Length: 140
Image (cartoon, rainbow, N blue to C red; front, side, top):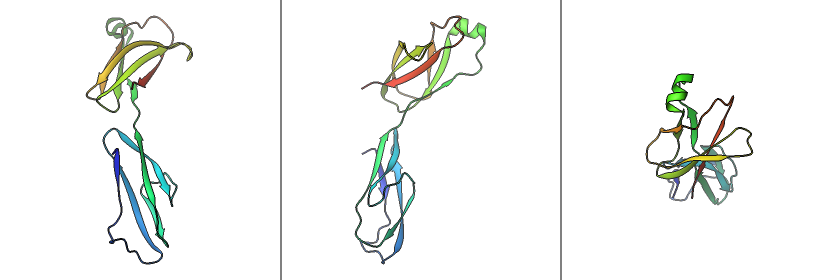
């Protein structure tokens, strides 16, 4: 289960109109996506008025990988070490790292199994291009 939700324990009985607070707690590598059932919101925690029987489920999804540029990077460091990115995201997952100059043609230059974050990625193919865009895809 990618997370849990806590409901105050009242042995199933609440006073009519009593307001309970629902809190969803994602497990590592997951994010809360919203409540479904008698309450539909992405608020967390969420308040719910108990005026009848309720069925509620907390939704969870996989958190996304987030790349950030390593700082500082200079022309000499780019020439020596390539462009450096730091990847933060779920561990024990494989990722394909790709670059593009036009957001249309993507070239994969590295695939990794990330076991700890932040994970350093180096694009040794960086050239004198004025700009380069990066994306990271989680592999199945």
